[in-house]
Length: 212
Image (cartoon, rainbow, N blue to C red; front, top):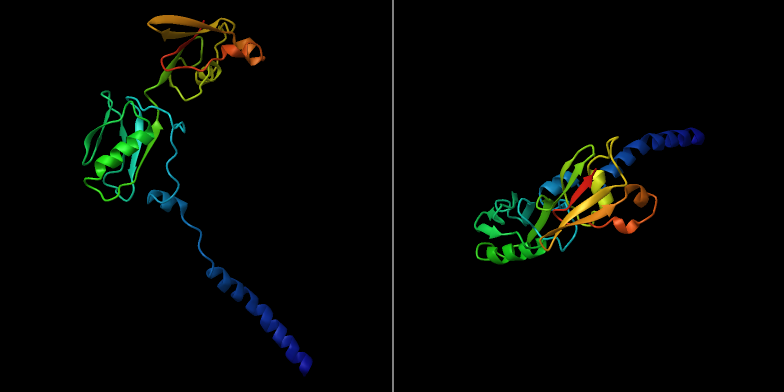
């Protein structure tokens, strides 16, 4: 009789285990919805086109101005050719010539007339003001955004590689210095093999890489 009761008790406990586990799982704290959090402005901030704190904003750059809890003011705007952006309440704001941090501080100071304790974040989402040019025997010649630290080798990779007629030993960079055009030689085969690495110079805005 006792053994029979013990068996019944074991069977009852085994049947109750799934129910207990389900109840325990329902009490767990749900995982945060990262997508919803990002949309509400409380999640991970939008990734910028550059992480260089010294980057200077220029005309045609695209910047994201985020004012915390002020969705009517926050927006992504292009920098006009005159170097200014347009924002609600503030109208035209000078952006070109400033770093994102400096522009954020300027907008913060101006918004204090309209918003209590404004918190402004400025992010450059697209760099269009600083460009380099790759011409000649490459797959995709044209203008390309200049990212901080871009060298000749990286600039060439933006153009998608060489054509079969490219003279890789005769590549050169044209740069305007003090009103004069200066030519910097670049031997692709030497650089990629570890020779003359000094030829892989850091590019500046307006530089033109020519692949004969």
